[in-house]
Image 1 (cartoon, rainbow over the protein chains, first blue to last red):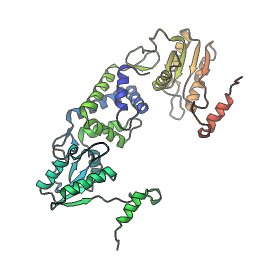
Image 2: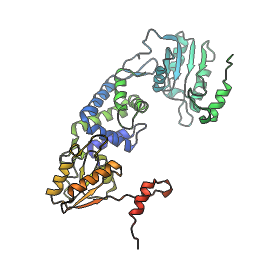
Image 3: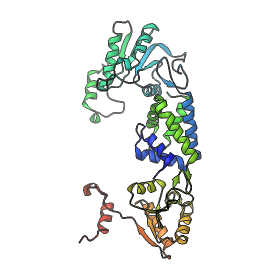
Image 4: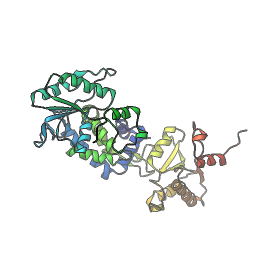
Length: 198
Length: 198
């Protein structure tokens, strides 16, 4: 039975997303069995993150500097803002290398169920950035969930009376996906959004 | 895209068992989004473990003291040693509260495939403890895998010519398990080890 410090560490780890008691125990055991090679490097990396990590005051990205490396990158197109729920979504789009504009991280979605209203998200900042900084297009890239889509809709309403072009990322069949394994919602979205090919 | 310190932390975490790139990213994001409540306590717990954790010189348990709390517990029966593969197995048996003797952690199993021989495990220490400290029973509780059983067999051979009673934990149907979902190996082990009930 783990005791004292080890147990505290297991408790803390098991509260993180994706980890339970058992996986936290396995993690800790790997760490302590191989202290020099795993625990100490992890410790110093975590210390470095704790010292350096900041939330970008402009877009809400999580980075080791403020403003973040996207907002400060001169080569990026400053006329488009892509709106995402979380920094993880921003990172996911960055991995695809398809987008060269700016971002805005909302910090979640509107949710009647959880009592999350517009004032709990970084929506005012988005409206301010969009309307005062020469932005020509706002791309709504919230998740394809009910809450995500409702949030996108709310932002569309807020920006409706401006000249800013509003767009939503496409919903449809994932590349490599097989129709037989897809849910009806995705299929009907893909069908509705069908495009002429010749 | 995470950069610098954050990326280093994700890389290190994603090498731990049970974590991949995506889950490591989610973990790090949770940590940095809620620095005071999650990252800093985790950091100090990890620091405490790094400072205090030790492998028990007697039994190989991982604890914050040496000898470990099992070996130093005067109330435990010092005549039985339960042999397990890893400290996690020891913790698992301790959670069941069924066993009040001592343990011996081998640190793995014999494996021809991975080139792990008796000299790579803490087997000599076990033989020494078993034969010099008035031990009357050695319980083999290695995993019910080919390697685990082979290791148990090797230890049985080594202790055959002593007066020490050797036993193996029972293999059979897990409590709460349904026969229909069990593999043939488990069922035939359960059938062979059947016991008279009246």
